[in-house]
Image 1: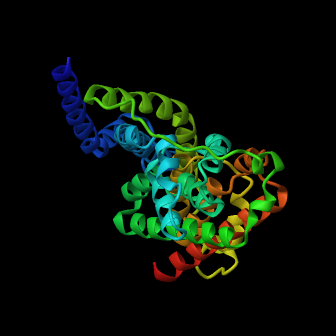
Image 2: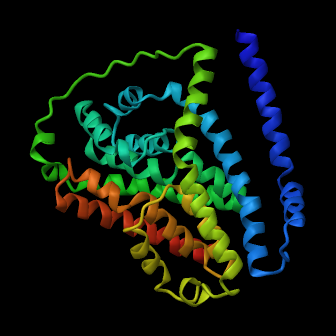
Length: 337
């Protein structure tokens, strides 16, 4: 049974590599069979979609499978255990780093928040984790690497972690515990004991396959929607159109992008193809990434969920500090790239 699992794993990896390497010729072959001129608006949009859709889904499947295996070592219980009792600063860095490799989204915000409080994790450290988890996750980094290269992915990683660490430190220094909802303040502290239940090769492979089923099965419609929007922008929006209000010369473009992004909601996988299309039409990289970060890190649905445990004043502080950090990221990207 174990040998069968290893054989299937190796076979699946080979198939994945072959498919990924064949994306360009396959997409070009399909386009050649369609009755559309490749230089027409519709032809450009279809070419964008036929190449990017399988590329993004393949990347997402591979990364989610690998992270599903890795996450068998990083359950919520172990994450809380690792963060409890650490010194400030170091704990914030560790929390933000764990946010990158853990699979928690906005729907997990409240139970994770309560669990961290019970474990005695400082509130500032908890916020560092909650900022990093949706914004600087493995999916965002993989897609940024695949679409824009390692330089952009690494810069995004460094600046995103900086926002999470500094934001958590600032909130911790402000002593915002008094702005928690009263019932959260009264939660008793509990000692966390971690015990892994997934410790065999077969169990970890099954966990990876389950992660693909749950994550990819849930987000693929949003990914295709995002790529569809990106394809429309790529095919129909005139060249350099976005430069007029999202270019480097418009200093107000970064704050505007953040304000537009906050009420929206999408995963990183769904919004990155849109960012790619905006860039192709003249948007500045920093402005486009600030828009993406505000969508995934400060979405209105997540704020509504967090309202169960945070007062409106604390939510306002949280949004303001993270928004300032995102503005910094946008301006830095526009300055250095």
